[in-house]
Length: 148
Image 1 (cartoon, rainbow, N blue to C red):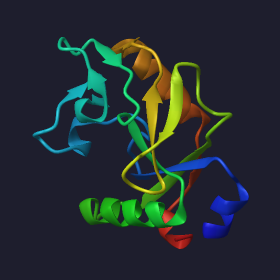
Image 2 (image 1 turned 45 degrees about the vertical axis):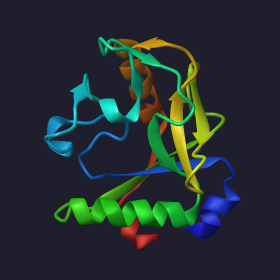
Image 3 (image 1 turned 90 degrees about the vertical axis):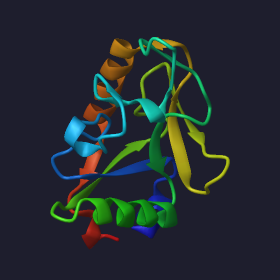
């Protein structure tokens, strides 16, 4: 997998438990303490006070990995919290597969970690549509443990 990541520069990966959506959450996929708005986890994004709008922030958004080591660490974490389910790895090409209004930004504190951020203030319904579009464009590696 490390060689594949190096070969495809700009490949951004996101491990998710099988049966889960690669860009949206269901209530059963997160802890009871976390808040969801239309499948979007509130702690991932900078929301307006009424939670109807998502505001640009270069260190908030959906989490992705760009290095083998970061992917491995996140994969292990997902496995620990989803013992019964295989973990699949969804991926996109950073430059080609995201719609306007989104941008991948490197995490300033964690090497190999990226945020899919918004570049403009966006209504939650528009964010959800665009996240579904990103998911539609993602390819998947089934049962990522085989390649890690």
